[in-house]
Length: 437
Image 1 (cartoon, rainbow, N blue to C red):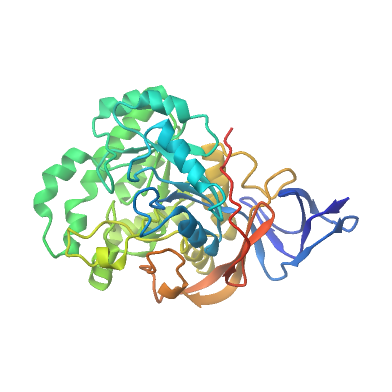
Image 2 (cartoon, rainbow, N blue to C red):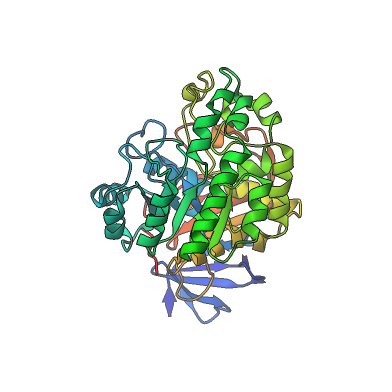
């Protein structure tokens, strides 16, 4: 057999094990793993000294298209993704207009075609009365799930009434992911907003805002026996609650909430540290880090939410919430491997195996015959500083500027094609919509 590509001398890392093996690729698929002496190839990559991971997912990004392309679009966001070793993204629906009809969903899919370097799937936005539209898109290729904002964040999507949420849960077989902040609590606590003081952000959007909502979602999931996923968990109390309720519920944590804490992040970064849910005190950060170490977290997603520096530098609370993160997710996790907080196999679990299992993704997330040839190549010994000038996102900044990292994604392969190599984006955007079982 003649294959298109053989990747030689690398160390493969899956969610279960690390092993030496060569990988043969043909027509964008893995055709053999192991001893490939009998195969002929058109092209060889020598991966000596590198770990080869199943392509990493970022299951929570905001690429701002349609409506705010001046700060990010599907093309620039995907460039940032592959430069950080991410091969697949799940993009959020709080655009302008919100992606809450089948027509708008299909239009977004067609806008992505031949423009994205990574593979992609889009969330469909839930509104209190668009369950008919949800039914129309839930089986589409490229639809990763339904997104519900229980508290208002960026955009206009909001379903604040828990009876309406219950109806949505009962109406779809698709995974539903939640932004868990209680809108009633947010409205009540507006009096804690201090103009010009971003340190008041975690006081306004405090722990109780999240916990009240997450408790309700746990109740509803258990009552309806519906699988749900809760995004960007930030509090110690939510971790304890969710760990006891894993039957129908999985949860996600961002690198920001693992690495930054209040008040130091607000002192150093000001409104650049402003995001929803807020970055919290070291008590909460320490519990999240313990959850990381104990393998309690299901998925790490970046909540990549770029804004221009001029927008972010407006006086709080006129400054928008959100920060970029798709390009720094993998470096920050690999740095935790260097600190021995987690293993390289845990990284695969958090960014690849658990996403494919939880969201029922077809043909990705394993280094196995028949699976897509999406790979993240990492150098665990490479030391480098994160810097604003590395950032491919249109926003051009990162909250982690100046942070020294050990362990770095050095190559990204999508469907058997290298798209990022030797610190350069190469080739054409050939990302495809993700298929689901």
